Image 1: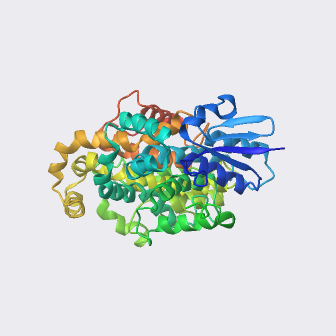
Image 2 (image 1 turned 90 degrees about the horizontal axis):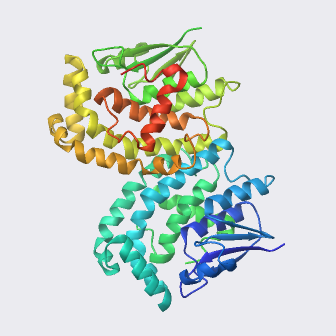
Image 3 (image 1 turned 45 degrees about the vertical axis):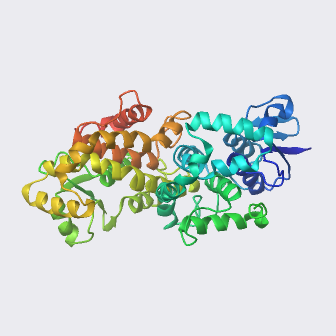
Length: 227
Length: 227
């Protein structure tokens, strides 16, 4: 049985950076499942597994193919119920979808402003052309215009992370005493920022920065191994 | 055995409006527990149960007194485990603390801008003096200055509710197919806005407005009965 995770990289395939793929890396580790990671550049995604999906992550689990990070987490929970739970019950599963909404709708837009130029610079030439055109069209700005906005974006990040800071006054992880998939959703977002920009843009004593360090230590430092 | 919920009101004790107290009203209904609600004005809160708490809600359950909406929900879950769960398991309990953070840190500040003058106008004279002084000091503005900011605040509300809109593409409630305490956290926030301003400040076809209507219908329209 071969388990393959297709993820996303730039010129250096040893530095996969997609937030959604990191969620799945952590979920597979959480379940204690072995896998081979195959990072591909943006413009190769449509060729993964004969065009199975327009986006990564894509997981091959034996004969099965699954796309979308949340659907992959649901699949892993259902297929490997005797391994550690990713959701901690039905309530946790339902509320994880809200955490996904928070990450994607309130946190990712700020991270994009912080990281978009650095992401571009990590790509090979073919991907750079695709990335610049698609992102400048979507964001309505030149990639170079984002550098001047970094201080504002860093302040916005602190503001948008206030719900996390509140939660961390009461517990060590979104999942409580130990992490759940909801933690990996936010971890993936900040790991994306860390790998692409080299920094979290947070004060090191911010409780979210300290929580993130705890996540980097999980699974023998799986997240910390990519920098 | 007498169960008493102390909540918050203005001149009209039939229109309790505190978001935190509404969470507990819904949690008690969810558990199918009978109770008497005793709304008090702001300046009477310090006299509730011989000064037990600086804030409401306060729940008396027989000989026990409990303060803080989240602590009350935890108490109810532990004390009445055979009635419908408020959290749907340990994962749901942990993630509900994050939902509390989202509501208080990102949604409540916007609701305050929308409702603060209307809240003032609902209070009796003694409470109005206390409320104006404490709120103008905390917010750094005259209460009258908030009226002009309402259109901006309404736009901010739509933006801050994006995580809810994302979640509602997949399920009917934060809790999944049926509501959990996490739903009552957000319901309490918007019920506060509805009772104090008479409106949700959302387009009626917004998925959060539709979810809110579903919540108003719960428990024989308990929330809808106050307008």
